Every structure is written in structure tokens, then in C-alpha cells.
Length: 275
Image (cartoon, one colour):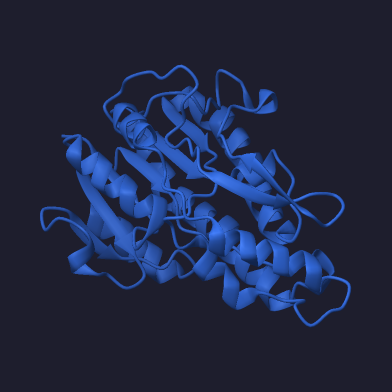
């Protein structure tokens, strides 16, 4: 039985990924900063892991044992105009989203390289291919993940280790918005307040579920089936985005393979199958 370790399993994509891999017959190691036993089936292994803490990363990887697939999902967002983003918020975004992902890669990749087998999946975001306002620094952190994952794929290819990117759209049933709101800045600024109010309102009103077909496709990926254009997640939920005039427009968020990321080495459409 192949083993997958997933970070950030307390909610959202991490939680759903853990459930889907478990249903597909994998040995799942679900990690989160504060383990919550009631979130997942008791047959899953649950480990405490803070990707920003080197000692925590080392303990979790040692406790996990051999890992066939690593899914780097842990991360958070922040809503603020670029110029009003607090330095401490920017540092925290990069510490978790970029350096935390890198820390997990550094901890797991050597073992995969020695075995000449393994898969690393880094979860990024569609905001790196479709620019949106008010989440610029978050977008920058995810763009950094895209960049080093593309290089990682080339570097690890000779050793039989595959690296993939997954770019989900926003899904209302995750806690992304809840986690981002504490970092909200600019509501008291006369210039930015209208944009921010529209953005926040769109998040609050957007309650459409992730389409059931997306969950089935995620399961197919875990079982090794090759999709046509599907990634691990395709979110068809309606999403409101600020247009260039500060108004609110409606668009459909669909995860797709951006041409600049299409390569034989870092393919987002590749199935997540056992090495």
C-alpha cells in the first residue's frame, strides 16, 4: 500500500484530499498544527506538524516513515492592497506558503531520491494565472511556489521523482476566507474601502459548493487514472471579482493548465499514482 503525507488537513482541500486518498485505499498520514481526531476516520494516521517549525517538520517526517507521495497543501491568504500589507503579514505569508513548502520538500526529497521513486505535489492557486486585486502578496507567495516547483521537477527527474503543481480555484466550503480575514487591511482607507467592501461581500455571498464531479475527479487522480484537463481539483463555483472600475463582476473559476506550465517535467495534469 502506498503512503501519502498531506499537510494542512484541518480544513479545505487538505481535509478533502485526506478523505479521498483514504477512500482510494492509500495509507494516509494527515497532518495539521493541532491534531483534531474527530475530523477524519480513525484508521488514518494523524500527526502534529507546523511547517514553519524546523523541529516539528523533522519530527513529523521521522514519525511518518517512508513517504511515496507528499502533498504540500498547508498555507493561508491575506486580503489587503499591496501598499497596505503589513510587513509582518508579508513575512508570515512567505514563511508558511513558500518556506514551509520548501521545508517539507527538503525533508522528504532526499529519501525519495535515494529510493529513486516518489511524487511531490505542491498546491498553488489560480491567482497566479488570473490576476486579482487585494491579494497581491498572497499571489506572490504562490507564484514563488510555482517557480521553484518547475525547477524541482527538472532537478528530480533523473532520480525518478516527479514534482507536480495543482492550482485550485476558490472553493467556498474551505476556510480560506475565514483564515484570510484577520489580516484584512484598508477598510478605513477612503480610497481602498469600496474595493475591499465589494471583495469581502463577494466572499460572504459566495456559498456555492464544489461540484461533485470535482470530488470524483480527485479520486480518479489518486487511483492513477489520467484525466483530460482535470487537476486534483477543478472548482466550478461562481465567484465574484472586482473589475477594473471597482465594480463587481461575476466569473466562473475553472482550474486549467496554463500554457506556460505545460511541460513533460512539471505537468499539472499528470495522475497522482503510486511511484
